[in-house]
Length: 405
Ligand code: ADP
Ligand code: ASP
Ligand code: MG
Image (tube, rainbow, N blue to C red; front, side):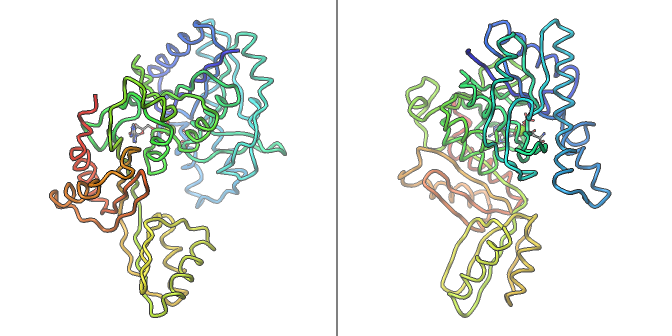
């Protein structure tokens, strides 16, 4: 059976008017005759009654005192409400539909509450519904562990549910519907002239997503890439084609592709820079990184020198990291309120002059570079949060990303 997977994010489901747009996309695909699986997120964003952050706010006044198992039970409610509501809307239009939890849809995960991994998907129930011409509306962001517990997949995990189902069903396409026109050259909330990219490779978008581009979850892209399932990121509120995500070879041969060094920009706020100096270099280097690893603190922007180490941690981990360093007898220099701005492009590998352009764009705009890091397809710059938007705009202009057709 030919299957299409559609995923609708929170803002696409937040009110009656938005849900009418959702309905339009579902009816169009259903009438085209493919088996249709619709994955839904919780409705809206923080403040909206059933949004994931609103559910989390319910326990904030109790000091967030809730065990991970029960926290996942709470978090899973938002998607349940979306699935049942959407089913009702479909029934009101005479479209046969069934709402399924992650577990009922056959999604089996490990037992890591809050960040569970999908280990397999039993497709029998889903396929049965599709064969009987029902739209299967599946709650995103959740699965069921082998001992029957509800688990969630980590924030933004509905994208992962969609591509994992797409992979298990060998879908012809996974359409990720959201509130923007596709994957843009930068976050449109920060860069006014960001442009939608017609086509990108799995690798490019994976790097953008890992470096903070929230538009799709990186794990979702990895799963699609491994299974070779094409993904499209597109707007719920228009009929535009959005961005096709596929293999690099297909991207290069396509009409929407431009020979580009840089594909896009991404950013992460809430970063703390730590600098530690010491007399005994080996002790310093080893003890610092062992302490971070031992406490499960992930480090970035790592730069190790004979008498000092510099690195960053997330703001959420910074108090713990500082306490560990002080316990070891160090007096770290701490810079809070930093942001990571990344320039990403499959074409920058081996291309001379990219760093020179970055430095020129930032320095001529008065932006201080606190640190830099690079891999073969990404150069990341640490700046203060107050200069982050200006840095993104300066880099966007420098690499002429506003001219992408
Ligand atoms: P959904 O609820 O549909 O999952 P998200 O909020 O998770 O939506 O993701 C969509 C948001 O991602 C957009 O509103 C946009 O602000 C943000 N975003 C960040 N980087 C990008 C980018 N490069 N392209 C498009 N959107 C981006
Ligand atoms: N509702 C979940 C979240 O806000 C999952 C998702 O939206 O993808 O993280
Ligand atoms: Mg999302």
